Length: 588
Image 1 (spheres, helix red, strand yellow):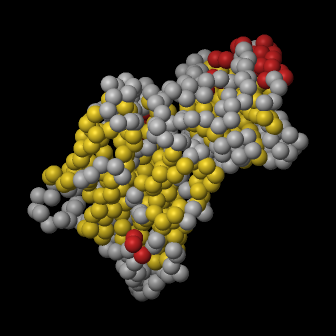
Image 2 (tube, helix red, strand yellow; image 1 turned 90 degrees about the horizontal axis):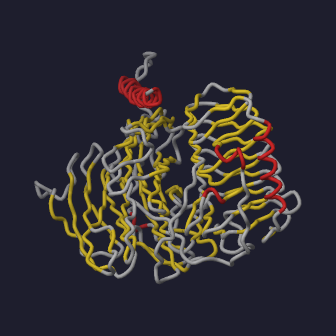
Image 3 (tube, rainbow, N blue to C red; image 1 turned 120 degrees about the vertical axis):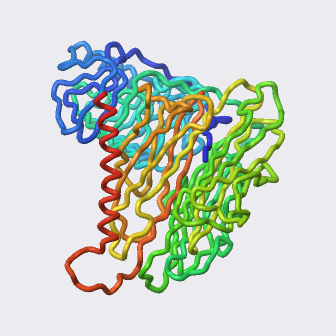
């Protein structure tokens, strides 16, 4: 599934700030007194400067490395910081700590236009789960009288002509960016900058007199500018609530047994619903069942909350797992994958006919039945080929091809949600494609598949290896590809960038792997993102691993069951293969 981050409309406009000269520091991705690489490989596009090098990790630098950078470099950093601190605040937050993603005192939650945003008193700032969008051409300055932090999986996004080279952060205490997050801008912070694992940063970490600490991160100092994308005629956004049901302990409920709501409005699983935006917080709820647990993933927070700005296409995934009698033999969950393409992707001359093609595959180990395909705007969606034996079962390794055509009059993101069943467990996959109407802009597409091994575990649980593959079914190469998983980290990869240009080309497949210990039945959600032509494409992949709730009574031989031993060695082999591939890539 792909969805696109657009910057429609705007909140209250504050007066413009100005971008200072960075002098010698402008070429650096990382500038520090001490540079510590904890694990993995830190990739730096730009120069690297340090006096002391530490840590067990490694780094790759596209520019020059300066050991003991010149005094003038430190002077230039200080001059830029003074310039930024002397610019008048265009908005000052109330005293105390502030979550930039949820604050509404400055305007729409999570949406910022160019200006100087200041905290008052001891005013630390954080970037929460919902993330923030910097929209518009101009300078953004966040002057923070305290620490700057972000949470896991948070994102800073550019829109409507905003440039990473015009974004500045000047905290007076340490900066800490959480794992699997994205960050944008130049951060000047001699109190120290710590970058969590698998962070993607468009900008610069400048700490001439301090310490910069990284894990397996990517820091790009060259400018990235968001295109001014065509606007829709409506100030709306969409929420699609997707239901997953797991009956691995004797339960019999289906999707329809859990009525869903957004702010009290009834919605149907898989159906895209439009809501006014910008608006305050939306909350997804359901009619709960005491015999089923509930978890949220995707764009929803842990309690089902999410924020919208115009043009958002967000997905909230609600998983219900039955609580019942102990089961010794764990049922195998189904696993499906759908790829959606549109032809054409752009209608520069105006309204026209668009043909959508959907390819549905069974990438699991059991046949899948009761398949439903819910599209939001194109109908009918017709099965044209693939069910060769006409048994209406999506057999293992079968591919079903569906088609649909519709006329578009404005830029639109079309979404489909596919659900299938096996062994009382539902499998879900999501796919989207955007078509631009009225401008010669080609939107990006990105696709993610995820396969866990093994798919079942005994009652004691165990290690599971997830192998993920990212492809580009579109026509434009993708930059800034980032992959997160809500249940498994660190993620090793990518392997497959055949020309070494850090762009996911339409002909490439990038492979990743991660391994984690699972003690109970788990549905995890992975999200991949990539950028092209000022737009961001996303894809979700869900997979369920079932853990038996009771152990068989076996003779006490002192040895683990042979099946567990087999899976442990198999999973370890997959992980080692992926890690070796990644290391070879960085040695080339």
